[in-house]
Image 1: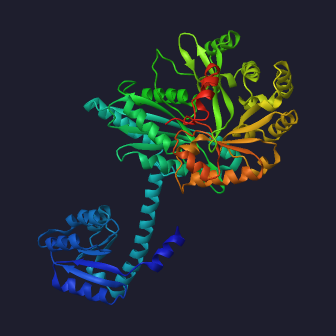
Image 2 (image 1 turned 60 degrees about the horizontal axis):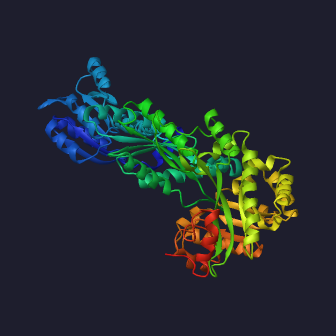
Image 3 (image 1 turned 180 degrees about the vertical axis):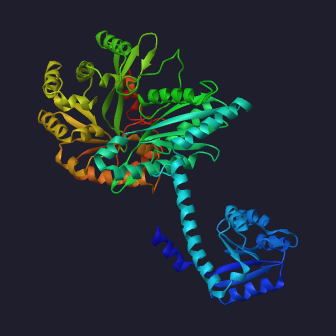
Length: 588
């Protein structure tokens, strides 16, 4: 800190001084001595408390030489006013007597130095000013350090958002305020999706850049009365004031989530980072901090199981899905029954050429027709399947459902279509996986060229060496491989060049925020060129607006999949849809 002080002293401007004394002779003598000090650039005088207060209200002084005995009152009464107006100002007490009691009292008041008038000399005042400047610089640095430490105790050092301590303090205040005026508010627990992959693949420095950008985006949307905090790691939380309904809180949470739709740029990487939001309402879900945080946390894990969703606390009678990585025996039992009694059904979403509207194939998407509940999307049960021993049975059953349907279509269509089946990353660890796929193709008499296996980009990141080996084995048997949700992970282009990939599907987040001249547009154009040079089919997912078709084709992307073409449909509706589609194309 001494080096910092020396720097301050080198650049410190000359000092401004106020002399307060009702004795004209003494006052003029002090001023005359100060004028001999070249460091004193401004010297003003006051002969009373009243005149001193007027000057203190207009000017900021570095030093005040103050006589305690004034005609209109005790000069010591000015000390608090001086300190309140300028805490860096140094007060030098000057009196006509060298009284130790008065000196001790002056020090207690916070006076910098006590000087009897008979000791005042040019050298003594010069030394007082010189030492005072150094003391003032040290005090300023100490205040700055204290403020920084106080800030760090309440704010996250990485994102500069409120930290857990400040968040909990504000939550306590809100709960106390609610007890008095009954104003409702919402608590949001937020957990980033796929963030661990950033640290694992690109390092913690990249992770820090992502966290800072997430903090900026979240803060940009919330109101000044709201609080967004980083609790630690990839956990954030928010307090939403003046929300009179759960619908309002959920809507605001969704808007905050949409700030992550645009990928985050870290060097040459465009990272798609999602988030899961859990919402708890005061007073519906609790009135004390611990209860509200617990409810919001449970809801967040409910949302986490759907990856990138927003969930409201469901209450005791409507228990949420289990936390990620956990299973419940009840859900496993239900899934076992679903596999055993064929409650699973495949829906099919077409992939088309945007220029000619030619149908190239379909993606098979599983649905669970759960008794008494209806259709359940895979996002709601796949986390449990991934964490138990049912995954292999589930995978091979869905593959058989697709191959069985393809066998029927081969006999019905002049030109059979390729159908893509989603495969979990865990299946790549199954040593017999490739053999099982080949056996089932033979059993159902479906040419291997009509089967596409879709692996998410994150599956390649988890174990790239193993993934490449399996892809090469499948390719050798004529099975096509597609990378799904490209852009959500961190696959290098070098890796893509070395793998026999036949198709890349860009994550739907890029199409949803597509505008001419945007980053997403530039990325799509670059990917289209890369895929064209590698003879890889490039498909944009999530094409939900027909107006995006011309722009996508202008960017070099001619293959699309999304709601503007068709929603996923059961197999019974595929042939009628094909008859209606060709040659009319999409309907507005």
